[in-house]
Amino acid sequence: MSWFSRKKHDSEEVRKEKESLDRGLEKTKKGLFDRLSRAIAGKSKVDDDVLDGIEDALIASDVGVDTTLKIIDMLEERVARDKYMNTAELYSILKEEMMSLLDVDGKEEAPVFDFSKKPYVIMVVGVNGVGKTTTIGKLAANLKASGKKVMLGAADTFRAAAVDQLVIWSERAGVPIVKQQMGSDPASVAFDTLKSAVAQDMDVVLIDTAGRLHNKINLMNELTKIRNVMRKVVPDAPHEVLLVLDGSTGQNAFVQAKEFTKATDVTALAVTKLDGTAKGGVVLGIADQFNIPVKFIGVGEGIEDLRVFDKKTFVDSLFD
Image (cartoon, rainbow, N blue to C red):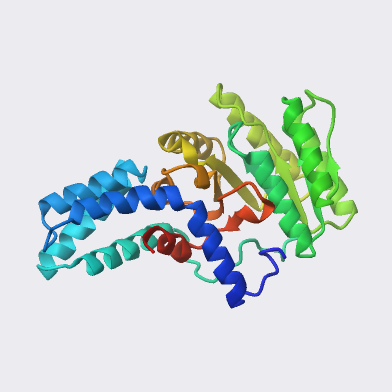
């Protein structure tokens, strides 16, 4: 079953998802919780030593310095006001603050995508190796399983492996793909994809793009050209620009986010490979520093391991 069509309050599905997420975040959870436990061990109140230990724990989990300092400042204010705070209260306040940092769009009940727009065009960006093409494939499979008519566009025309991989995913998901010869103009592929999608009455279009950062001006120009050409077919396209980041790279993911937000108007994030790293705190830092909502996280290899991001469930998994 796709998470696009799953009943929100299906308790058995929720339980299974929570267990899967707990497993996927095990390394981050263990690293963060162990460090926090050491910071407060033997302490009867939250003092400067405890705050220093919490700061070290958050930075070591790749939350990032700026976001960590936000959290510490908030804790200092609470300690000054409340005077005494036990361990349970401290964890509860930490959870509240983390969830507030993740609530960048304030849309508690908003759908992941606005399917009232048709075809709904998603341009996917990110450097090579972050799991961009795999994320597109998993998204396509979930959308197809929910009953949507989905089309892929292979606009990363500079790497044969990217096109080949996307073709494999299109076959696996059972969705059509538009591609051209290697070295073709990416904007031309995007244009053809949208023309075909409109003609075939598709619900969703996923456009893969090249992941090169060696020349930022070229990247910016290429993504701008793709957007402009797509708008000749669908005037308000793309409806979503999804930046895929590899969570296991920690602070390097911040650098990538910085460059891509300069190059194009990124509207959502997908953070992959969180199951293989203790650096899951990067999700908090990037959402906070760039004020862009995290919509998906990857916690495993399977199609079902690309999850719609839920900030409460995510934070609960770090502390449970």
